[in-house]
Amino acid sequence: MNLSITTYCRIKNNQVWINDVEIFKGIPNSEKDFLKQLYQHLKIDYPKFFKMDNLSKLGLLTVALIRDENTKLNYAADDEVAIALQTEMGCLDSDIEHQKNVTRNAASPAVFVYTLSNIVIGEIAIKNKWFGESLCLIGKHNDLTDLISYSKSLFLNNKAELVITGTIDSVNNEHCVNLFLIEKEKDGTNFNEENIKKLITH
Amino acid sequence: MDELLLKLKKEIIVQLNLEDMKPEDIGNDDPLFGDGLGLDSIDALELIVLLDQNYGVSIEDPEKKGREIFESVRTMANFIEAKRKAVN
Image (tube, rainbow over all chains, first blue to last red; front, side):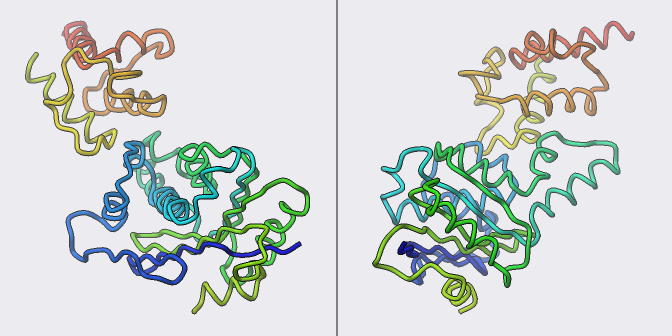
C-alpha cells in the first residue's frame, strides 16, 4: 500500500509553515501571546479555545491549518479520520500549574482536566467532530517507530482513510509541532520514519 | 447588591477565561448555562470553587441546588447574601 505525506504543518519559534512555506510569524513582545495571534489570524470562532491549555490550543490550531490546506478532511466520514500524536513533555505545563494550585489549597477543575496528555486529541476530535481511532504516545521525538507503525496499521486494517500524525509539544510558551496528513496516495512524500525525521529536523 | 453583581461578573470573566467579554455583556438575569453564557460542567465546578474561595460559602448539595444557584449572576448574588445573613 502506498502511503504518502500529503500535507505537513510545522510550528516552531513562533513561526508557521505549511508544506515548507512560511505562512505566519508571531509578533514578538505583543500583549497577545503567539497562540492567540494565530487563532485570530485564522479567524476561528471557538470560545472554548481560551479555556484550553497551550498543548490543546496548539493541536487545535495546527489541525485547523492542515484542514484549510487539504479539503479532503472536510469530506471524510467522522470515523475515517484518525489522530496519532507523540509528545515528549505532554501536559507538563498543566501538571505544574495544578501542583502549584494544590500546594496553595486552591485546585482548579479547569486546570485539572488538562492534566492528561491525550486531552489534546479529545479537543481536536470534539472541534472537528471526528470520532475515529486515536493514540497519544509519550516519547522522544527521535524515536517515532511506534507512532509510524501504528499509523500504518490503521490503513492496513481499514481503520482510517486519513491519519493526522506527528509530534507536538508546548511548554512554558515554547511551541514545537510537526503534524502530517497521511493518505493512500502515490503522489507526495512517502510516509516512512526516515522522511518524517528529515522533515522534522531540517 | 449592585456592587456584588458587578464584582461577581468580573470574577466570573477571569475565573472562566471568558475572552473578550466585559461585565456589561452579562445581564443580571441572563442564564449562565445553555443558551446564555454557554458554560459547561467544568465551569460549574469552577463557580463552586469561586464561591468557596472568594466568599467563603459552600453549597451543601451541589447536584440538587446547583442549578438553582447558578441560574444567573443574580441568583448567585442572592445565594451569597442569604449565606451572609445566616452567619450574622
